[in-house]
Amino acid sequence: QVYINDVETTTHYHQLTTLQIDAEQITAIYLSPQDPDYFQAGEQPVALYRYQLTLIRE
Image (cartoon, rainbow, N blue to C red):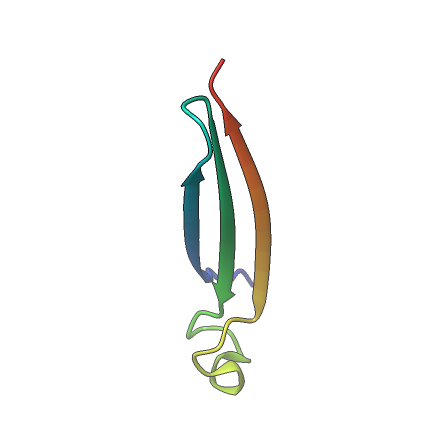
């Protein structure tokens, strides 16, 4: 059986120069109400992913 989870992504950008932006990104995964563990998880994410990004204009 396939469950569709809710995903929330938050990104904080910081411009270092006119050519470079650094960012911190956090993605939270929440269970869907159809998942058997939904009520056990409550409103807490079941997984968190953290990324460090560097964007450079060429």
